[in-house]
Image (cartoon, rainbow over all chains, first blue to last red):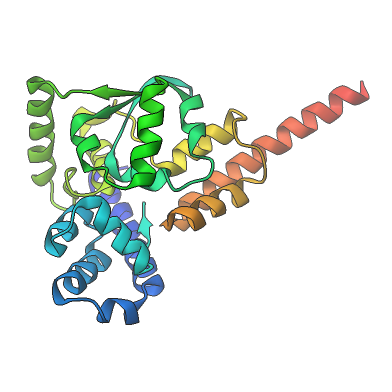
Length: 77
Length: 176
């Protein structure tokens, strides 16, 4: 498989992951959060980048993972 | 998939894995599992810390201190990963590490297991019994983790196929 084909495979997987995160997220809960946490969760739903998201939220990594659970946003890997 | 002598666990894996009721099966798959000081510092919850502390005390986990040369190598891999368009940063999320070994020639000898591969390995070696689909479903429910559907279905199909072969071989033996 060429590099381009591999990148396309990963792009498809990331699209699938994003769709799952968007579909399962508790948007009502997310919209009720303080602005910083709300923005971080929306960033995570779109990117799956947990470390940058945790920094945006101003939380430690595990605290942000717990916030993901409360918001029903799955980690898709 | 063959059993390995040792593995190194990362933070996100340990946090999610600690939520699973079958979490201790991890220790049957490897002779030693290393947890780096950096990872240990990131684990905060009582659930995860207690599980890790118990495993450290019993020798199932081992603390690993990153030497300067290892940190240098890690920095070079992070830099390298940022130079490939489309490759996620290996320092930002688990998918980045999995992508890196798939895309970077110099890392092709590295094996990265997600929970998907760990559970697959545990089922294949008989450490977890039951229908594979139900095992993965339980993991997803208890951890709020999701596996990519196509990859999950492929693994379930593989495991069920192997189970059928074993059953058929066993049935033939009884009839002989």
